[in-house]
Structures are given as structure tokens and as C-alpha cells.
Amino acid sequence: MGPESTCPCRGYLTRLQVRTWIEPVVASTQVASSLYDTGLLLVLKESLGVRASNHSTSLSPRGALEDQQQKAISNFYIIYNLVTGLTPLLPAYVLGWLSDRYHRKISICVALLGILLCRLGLLFKVLWDWPIEVMYWAVGLNGLCGGLSAYWSGVISLGSLGSSEGRRSIRLIFIDLILGLAGFCGSMASGHLFQHVSGQAWQGLALTACSVSCASFALLYSLLVLKVPVSVAKPKAPPTVDTVSGTVGTYRTLDPDQPDRQSVEGHPLSPEKAKPHKSIIVLLFLGAILYDLAVVGTVDVMPLFVLREPLSWNQVQLEASCCSLSSLSQPFDRQCPNL
Image (tube, rainbow, N blue to C red; front, side, top):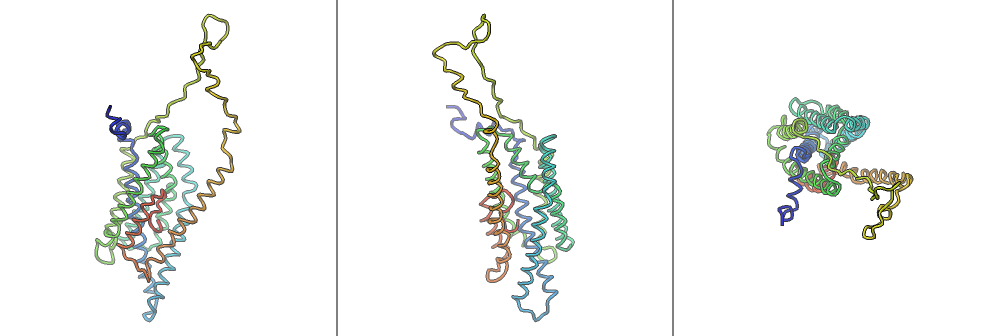
């Protein structure tokens, strides 16, 4: 027995060049996203909590202050999610067209640049106490760079190119597994990093700095180290026909031991049958929309209730909830509330 028969993964790892691996980019980007999302929620709670207490009277009950804070957080995320969802529509299409026409790394590198700028916006807000509305501009820049749509399409494209047709599904599942594990680790560390810096002014500095560091590593790795893998798909050989030389025209051999090639090859599909039905595509889009409304809508509402009484979760408890959602490994950075 050879080495590939004793270890099935060994032959696959030896055939795959290290510099074509997209997994380091996926892991570092997901850790940066987990740290950023938890940090944004906690920084938002602190900023809007102070703003609500300043605009209220000293005789206001605690429940009224929490209602004002919850309303402010809800209004912020309504605008934030609208900017996140609408701004990448046209840039993601343009980046996808440029990637198909010129270079496969265009979409993923530009998207990672936008992700880094968004993380830098949160870091500058923590450092210089900027108003929380600056995050609208930060996430807008992220969307203009393609956002998560351009990033994830680039990841899937590079992951598919570096694998054969038989192992493509395994490769994509492995990338999704790396995504979930990285989100789990990032969420585990987010609550402790937020409490690392004492004092209200710079609380969350370590968390946002680590997020910027991971996003910077992902961008530099994709620019300097990552290489576009060569497609391993085997071209289909043209059908061959055995001929008898020395005759006028072409005749198939009449060897009874050889099967009839015409019966093996089968009839080619008509153009109408080869095209996918439009109803299937419409149902796929409808299913994605319903899934997004059901799952993502619920995840977006969760922080509005876990941060106030009767739960009143702190950073560590919020971290545990993010870890439980990270194990689901949803590929659009929805592993933590309001991601």
C-alpha cells in the first residue's frame, strides 16, 4: 500500500500548492469580523448609553433609560444594515466582471481593502471618541469596495479553481468549516479583549486593534502571498472513431469484443433541455430571500433584548452567545448578533 492509501488526505495536500490556499485569508478575515462585530455592539452600547443618560433627567427611572438606549441602538442598526446591503450591489457586479476578465484576485483584494477601512473606522472612533454616526461612512466605504458579496464570491472562485470536480464539494465544505472555527475563536476572545483596557475612554481598544491587525494580515496575504490556482479540470477528449485504413470513406470496425461507441456515448441534449429552467432559478432566489428574512432578521433583533433587563448580558455572556452562533458557520458573517 502506498502513502496515499494509508492517509487519504496526504495525497490531496501534496497536490495542492501552499500559496494557493485561500484558508488563511478566510480564517483571518473571519476572526477580524468576529472581533469587529462584538466590538461595534459593545461600543455602540456604551456610546448611546452615555448619550441617553445625558439627555434624560436625573429622576428618570432605569427602565426609561434602557428603552431610550434600545430605541437608539435599533435606529442605528436599521440605517447600518440598509447601507451594508445596498451599497455593494453595483460594485460587487463590477468587481466580479473585472475578476473574470482580468485577474481572479481583483474582487477579493478590493473587498478586503474595504473590510480593513471599515475596521479602521471603528478603531478611530474608539481612539478619538468620534460620533457613532461615523460608522455609516465606514460601512459605506466597505460596500463601495464590494463588501461581503465580492469577498465571498472571490473566495468560492479561488477555492473552486484549486480543486478537481470530484473534490470541489469537499474543498468548499472545508473552507466553510474554517470559517466557522475562526468565528468561534474570534467570538471566544472578543469579550475578554473588550475588558482588557480599563477606563471608559479607550474601552475596546485592544479588541478593535486586534481586528485591524487580522484584517491587515488578510489583505497583505492576498496581495503578496496568495496565487491564483491553475484549474485542474480535465478537458473532455473528443470522441474517437476506429477506422479501417485503405478504404474510401470511414467505417467502424466490426470487432465484436468492442462495445458499440454510438450506444455508449448516447444522444446529445437539445439546447432547450441543456438550459436550466427559469422557475428553478426563481425558486432558489425566493428561498434565499425567505432564509435571510427568517434567520438574519431574528439575529439582528437579538441584541436589543439580551443587553437589557431581565437578561442584562455582559461582555463575557455576549461572547458565549456569539460562539454558539459561530458554530452554525453561516458564510455571510452572520455568526454574531448584528454582524
